[in-house]
Image (cartoon, rainbow, N blue to C red; front, side, top):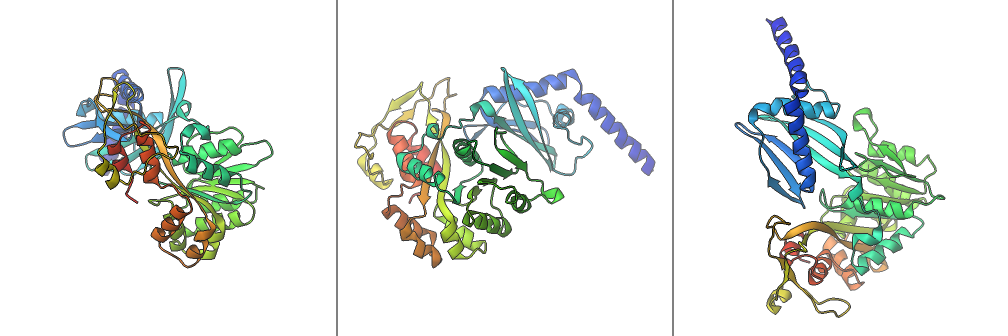
Length: 409
């Protein structure tokens, strides 16, 4: 009985391989990829349900559904993607990760693929990594004056830790890569440990973390520190061990850049002490804590000015623009170019909190993040909400989008 089972399984794999190489399936996969790229998607989702196979694209941070392929091609379609990514097509029960590259309109585009077994089959999510869209010029990221200056001052320091926080897909990696690009000089040894390496940068030594063989962030970081680095970038500080080595590296003359998952900049200090680090180490190592989000830009083809009542401005705590310009709030009417949404493209908004001397006593005494934020605002910090409102007042995004993405101070 078991032998028959085994043969059936082998037959299945062979037929899957044959189906996946079938011309209509190849065309269908190419169509899904090309449509996603033309829509400007950052992620492509292929989701199996009982009677349908759903395809969705994440465009400007919002998921939208597109035409679904027939349920009957599910296994062949997923097998084709596995073959492209060099994954095991006979494995259906475990998650798998891979990547592949295609040429599209003369550009090379990488796809990072993640496969997750769900109740009705395997769900595939592909993250689009398009180097040509990567703007590595810090100046062009469009930060407001205060965070831009704070960021530049921190990058000029000989040592210390620069931490960028924010949810997944908020552009943290792009900001860090832009910072590395600015620091990337011939007299500087820059080493990174990332999981995964998203974009390859010339002149920077990038290490791919692989926890399954013991090459964790902490292990990679230990080895990097024996490589005579000037600047170190760690993909993410996830645990006490990594945090501990990163802090010690920052205190022994290295500039350390990394990301952390918190809601705002002031929470960085409390998160590190929660991880088990001594407050005096946190206080003396962190040079800058930043929090970043991405806002949808108003569609340039259908934007129109709007008048915002003063009571609304008061409620959202809008205090006017720094340089005394008159605010020009807008909204997108919705047109063919933006598919009726009123938004097209995204821009980064960041809150950058240097380690002000006035905050240091509070950090030592494990003060709450709200206290740290209050003191930082008195020292000249512009919060995420304030920076986002400045962008809305300059006609780059809408008040609705600011309220959707940022929290009140």
